[in-house]
Amino acid sequence: MFKLKKGLFISQLVILCLLGLAIIFVAVPSYFSQQWSWSDLPRVPEVAQMRQIPETPLNLTGWTTIGQEKLSINNYPWSFQIIEKPGQKPVVIALKGQKYYKDHPEVEWVDLQGIEKWKTDSYQTLKFPSTINPNHSITARWFQAWNNKTYAVVQWYAWPGGGHYAPYQWFLADQKAQLKDKRVPWVTVSIKIPMEALGNLEDMESLGKLLGQEVQKTLEKEVFIDKSAS
Image 1 (cartoon, rainbow, N blue to C red):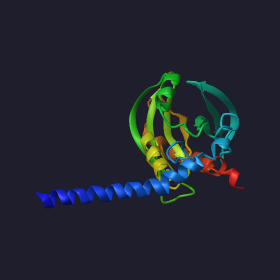
Image 2: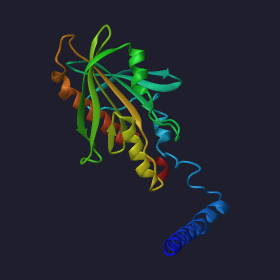
Image 3: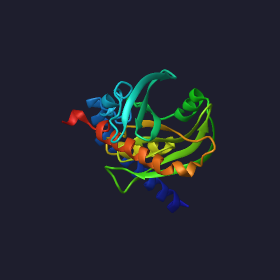
């Protein structure tokens, strides 16, 4: 029993010594420099470009922008951009860019469904590669929606080199980046493609992937860039 207590005492002493060293070498310097690593998050340099999204349409290869409108949903600015090309009915791209470094994805899909007054079904996933990180694929949600018209809808949270429709996937990517004192910017993307009322969603899949990849590529090229580093 004495040996057991002695062993526990030594273990506790070692732990206290390690904590003391951590305080000396980490906490004390942070105190004097007033840079507490857990007191705030690293900034997001790309926020400046993302704030311009409601004002500046994306330049999508092969498509012409015929209109753009800035709308406020739950006091947050969105861009609704209408694009078209020969032989294709106009497509609407809704974008919500991160405007503050502490902002994070929340209830964007619910907000949009409420604004559009959609009924939905046929939920699936759609995958397409990132341009800057071809080994990573973006996983979007892909479904049919209708109000007075019928649409095929692609939705995901885009970030540099990746994207997913589930907010927790961005959270995991951002937590990983914070270990290197970096952040992961995000943009909400929702693409609304007109389709026949009794049409098959599978018939729209190639166009959904094409548009998804083009929007992701354009965001990576025009928005997800750190201009402060240049």
